[in-house]
Length: 189
Image (tube, rainbow, N blue to C red; front, side):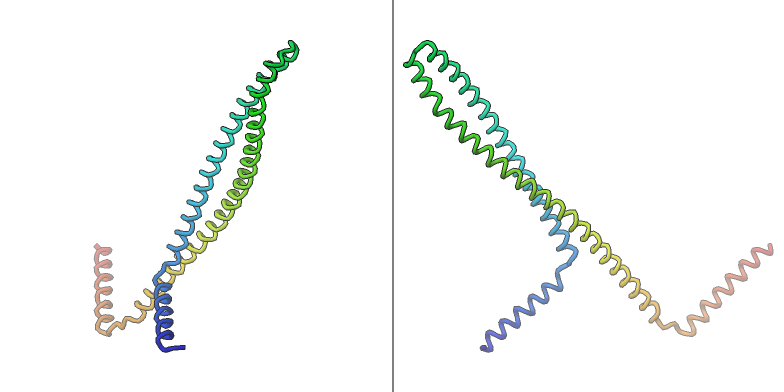
């Protein structure tokens, strides 16, 4: 391995190490949760879109089926009156509608399958989000407690490490004695 390659690898490793130190784990966790919320919202919007498509397909199915029933009634009437010419024209109208109704049925079934899969996936994502949210909340709470504890320990160390001179102790003692004498004099009066 060449020196230049090793040097580049060392610099990259050092940069990644510095970046890892700079990243706030709590902020990264919160961003991941926001990303999950956005993904759930997008999935809910997609489900609404598919439900609207399904509703339109069902409306189309009702419309085409109604047209077919009307043509069927007319076809029976034409056949009962032995009007084959009219019956042929009605059959020409009926056939495309039957094909269209079958296409609509296939589309509805496909939408139902897609919707069922998406709803199931969404519910799973919501359960995962809830579980991860609780874990994140616990992690952030523990991290905050650690920070507070570290700050408290640092303050105690700082307070314990301050050297107090004998003169400062004597001065504080004199102040306290004077305060006690003033309290006693005030009590006697």
